Image (cartoon, rainbow, N blue to C red; front, side):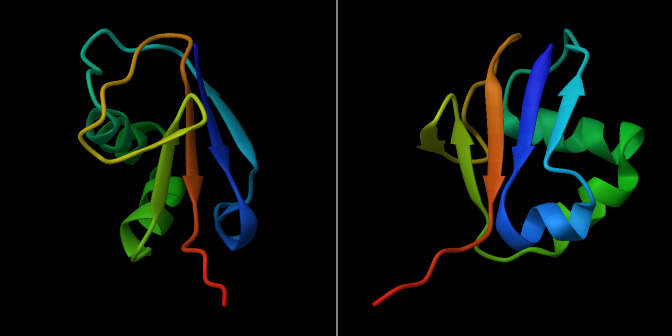
Length: 84
């Protein structure tokens, strides 16, 4: 099971703060999971595709779309952060 979290305005736009996804054996990277969302949760995938500067975390560590992912991991998507 893969836990997928959405934070901030992104959670509002996708309509959920968390998804629990059954693990798919072909998933190797964050990109693979995102491609899988196009099939199982197209509304979520569409919002992820529209976001520029999207931050990704795997098991609470910043990652990128090519980061490896495994069953029972936690994947988080965060909107861009600004500050001063």
